[in-house]
Length: 68
Image (cartoon, rainbow, N blue to C red):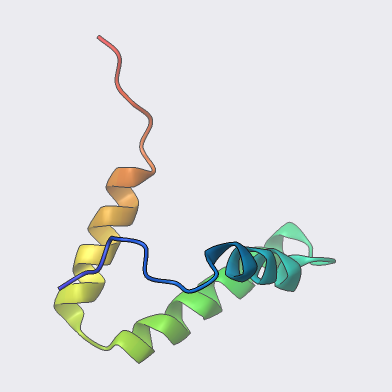
């Protein structure tokens, strides 16, 4: 089961650390770092159902709101 509630101790500190590892990188290097991080964390999780749920959640949360 995918945990979507806040679950990281010191989320601000983690976010700052995440931004810090990108300092000085080109956009391509930054994208490569993100891809490696995703694969490392996906391997750590290991559960295909959880990974599929995470992919779906990430895709749906990144879409702009549709106005009508």
